Amino acid sequence: MADKIDKLLSDYYSGYLLDAVRNRTTELETPISNDENIGGGRAINKHTRPVDDLLIRKEEDIVLNKCRADLSYAAKLVTGIERSFSWEIQRIVRLHYDKRLDYDWMAIEDRTAISARQGQRYVQWFKREVGNVFWYDSDKKTSVNFIKHKATLDDLQDITSLIKTRLNAVDN
Image (cartoon, rainbow, N blue to C red; front, side, top):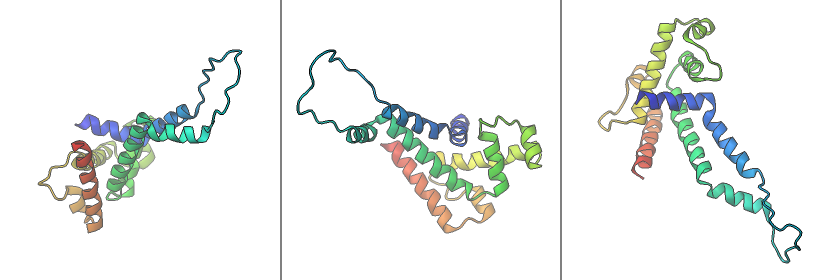
């Protein structure tokens, strides 16, 4: 389970999910020229609608829609949980999971002036909260972090709605 959470957070913070959407969109927008009519005549009454055809291809593309859904879910999940943490924890989590920066714990310690061990604790707390939402236990109403930071009812409702959408997506 922890590997799935690590991959989700790493893909989100590293921009992989956003890049997947952009790459697929670019791939769909790139024209494919398969002109088999070599030396032949022109078609009469042929309607060309490149913009409409492109919009239809984007709307019906299964891979692009899956990439968009993954990005949307990850953004809702992570930003919803990030709001309940302090800014220093958010910063450490971003530095740890953004693989483009390639920081180890010593570099994160130098940048944030927080010990590597404390940074690891912060990341574990954050991962636990993501895990509580990602694999929700129906008997558990609140998590340790929400109790500790005294989350508002709106925060709890947002997380509950995320959990319900996740459970609905799994059921379908």
